[in-house]
Length: 353
Length: 219
Image 1 (cartoon, rainbow over the protein chains, first blue to last red):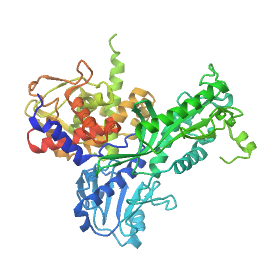
Image 2: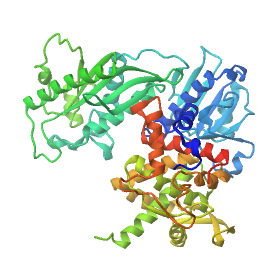
Image 3: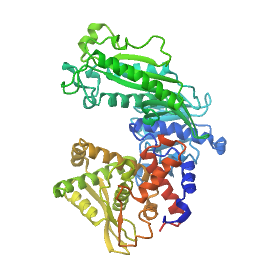
Image 4: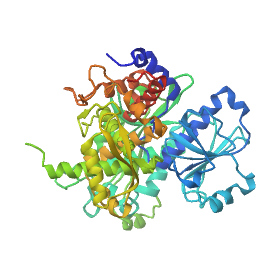
């Protein structure tokens, strides 16, 4: 028997879900991206509360700098528990918090907006921490995210509050283009501890290359659409999809699934070089990928399906896509990105991406 | 084959350093001994939500909340080795054990960081460290002075069939325990359905414990 009787009944648990839905989300993202997502969510949640109409029309500043409970630097701050539930006004305050916004130290005495940045950087020495600024006064509300902190004002991403639109396959392809050209294109661009190459000189590909690419795409997609859920490896009727871009409406409890991405790493050699793959193997992988993307898309009722091929082969070309039928009724977008084993052939190819 | 005691010892030390590190990073400093015991207990109770076995499967149920003397000894040992710094030592009175040492702990980063970095190269330790961080994040939403009430409302700990000074079993035959099973109910009840992650279940469980504790009916 459960202690406390009805307090542990399903209806009592459901009440907690209703009040705290969102707690613990995005745990697999890096802290700064999770902080962005949490900040965007808390602003939306606050705006859905009827009493938010009385909130002051001033900036809310969130800084990813959780402070200890007894830190003398926060003597003047008010401690607010479960900030993510948005039970208190956010605007007109500086919030020092962690990536889950489980609590926040709030300071209400902020200077005029013209002095805000210098106050945060020079007076409070908060310029190097990821920062989100919510401005409720323009265009129905804007959110600016400074992942490197306010010291680098040029590194900023802006989002409209409630600016939700159907995320298209074209937009997602643009993000994959960006990730490939900035983080995957050559071994030198990749993180050494998480390279898709086991031995680039020999074209040996890491056994977890797909997982590494998936992790990078998840972060990039979330940064672009922080209100969206970037789900991964979720089981559906016909298998388990690699990635999806979806939106969960907490007010209605309804999901909108924009699209599904199926990822394939094309290669000639395994991580140890002991197994080799021919053109036919790669063509089969592509054909399977198209079938998977179509089926997962239909399983969850998404608008589009996309197969993303990350081609690690020497002399890679689009022949691996050649066996796909023309005017395929499954209507899956198929894209191939070449991942080079060093900078030299990339330069020789004259390609920038 | 019985586990190698020296490996068990190293893993225990790493687990404690991980707790103190995560607690500092999420804003739970100063990290009191009480907090370490509560975080260790909740990590053990909720590890099965991540399909991980609890590090300590059996915990002695005390009236004042979980207190593991072995863990406390290990904390003291880490201070002696210079990996933790101890501050504000004092004594606190407990009904069960009388007076015991209370203190705040801080990571000695210069010495501890290489140990943590080395441990995180092992996938098991990296997984465990992620769980510890999530538990500390969830606990960061709990007022410090409510930690004891919180744990006393935990389904496993408050089970009336387990009397004080008996053992709370956190690793049942199926690898779960009442706390982890209740946490997993949130995955069923959440409108997010299969998208609900282990971390969400754990956070929601701790939020719920807080509400139960606030109602004053936790044992």
